[in-house]
Image (cartoon, rainbow, N blue to C red; front, side, top):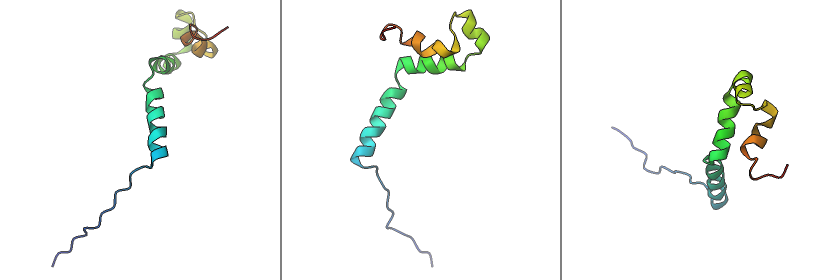
Length: 68
């Protein structure tokens, strides 16, 4: 004789977790942060060809929004 379990419980995240996940997703989809990730994936030689030092990637991407 076969037995089946019918009391399956799926836990959903709470309100704060859902809010947090929203902000994380929003930040992850930001085009500037994707550009930072892309530039960080380049080699030092590729960055030098673009005139960017590795320690100045964030400054380069956000230069129009930050005071120098």
